[in-house]
Every structure is written in structure tokens, then in C-alpha cells.
Figure 1 (tube, rainbow, N blue to C red):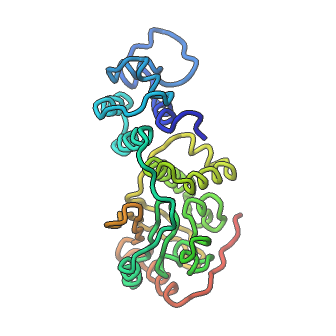
Figure 2 (figure 1 turned 45 degrees about the vertical axis):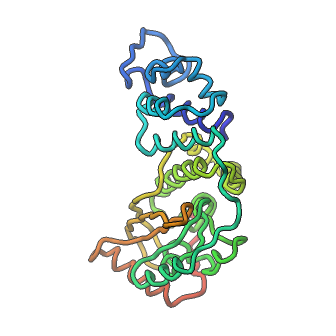
Figure 3 (figure 1 turned 30 degrees about the vertical axis):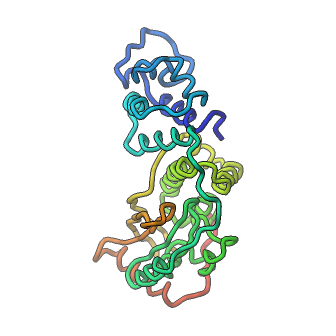
Length: 295
């Protein structure tokens, strides 16, 4: 876990991945005790004083201006997603109001949409902590047929996608490139924690994963930022075999902390045929489907 502020830890991690050569600074032949840029070099590149940048990284300086944040983003060669994350973390440092910690619910209209989509598209709704709030039967059959279909209906039993990826053996077997999936999950969790400061349940999830998974700890310390959008995954499914799916994530209108996640395959491909067979299977089966154990 971070020993400094989230903003400071992110800045430190981002400057550690850059060398003076990356940003056009001379080395002067000196030997460095730690990799990456020094604080003074980041301050020089961003056009701020070394003292100001040090206070910012140490969590002793709040409410950085948009101009300073943009300058830091340029100096550290941040991607657009990382720049947005920097803004989120700066807002957190400035005591942005925390998100509500109450139980999340799915609207009747969204449930109707999930049911309608079941004829063609596996889908689910996730909340601000990556909890599965609802899924249609094909979505359940694709991702977690070993769990009870009704599990998302009760906040006490709701599956959490992050927890499944790191702590659930069947989910680990499901993803052929598990490490790529795990890195994407961690990158998205970084986004969620910055957007939902003060969410004690989200903090508890991070603490649990940190304690129970060395792989999570290592990935979390890298401070990778990867908001969900479009990803391609190859799955090894116990009922459908191997199939490649496109996962897309859409924000739910008027529910800023909820997302609709869909899974499709290239039309006419073997994966599309496997997905269609799985959809039919998901529409006709209520009981959990057993998975093979982790090798």
C-alpha cells in the first residue's frame, strides 16, 4: 500500500519510469541511487519550484492548479488516461466529496435491457467497486457459471470481478492470458479509487487483495492506470471451449458509478459460433456449471 498520499505515490511512480535521456536532460556522468528522474528534474521540466513539487509529492501541497497539472502531465509524458487520473487524484487531495457508501441498485429499465440483450449479447452491470450488480443468463454462463445466477441480487453475496480474477481459481483458468487480464483489473481499480475517495468498502477490497495476493501487490505498486473501454480476451471455457471475445464497457446514463459490460465475437468466426452455443446454454440452465480446478 502507498506510504504517501495517492497523488504523491502516483507522481513518484511515474517519474521512476523515466530517465533523463527520455526527456532530453543531460546525465553529467553522475551515478543515481534510484532509477528515474529526480524531483528537481521534474520540477524543472514542469516549470515549478523544486520545493513546490516536493511538497506536492509528499502530500503537503493540495489544490494544484490546472496549469500545474497539465505541466506535470507533459513533463512526465503521461498518457491521456494517466492525465485524467492525475486530475482525479488532485481533486481527492483537495478533499473532493466522497461517494456514497450505500448499497447500489440497478434500475428496472436497465434490467429490462439486460434481459432483451440476452437473445444476442452476454452482458452485465458493474458498480463503482467492480461488484456485479446484475447479469443476463449468457453473461453469467460466459464468466461465472460456477456461481449462483441470483448471487448479484443480494449485496452480501454479490460477485466482485476484481476478487474473482485474483482469488477465484475457475476465473483464473478461464482467462488464457491471465496476467494481462489481471493488469487490466488493477489499472481499472486505480481509476476507481481516485474517482471514489473515501469509499471504505472499496478501500477494504484493495486491502483484502493486497493481503491475499502477492501478484496483486506487485501490480498495484506499479500504479498502472487503465480505465475500462475495449479489450479483447481469449477465454478457455469449460462448456464452450476456446473463444475470443471483445469486451466493451459503457457508462450507464444517470448512474455515474455504473457500467454496462458486453461481450461479442467476430461475426461468422468459430468464437461467434461458440458464443451462440453458450448463449443458448445460458438461457436454458439455472444450476451452476462445474469448472476444472486450477492445474
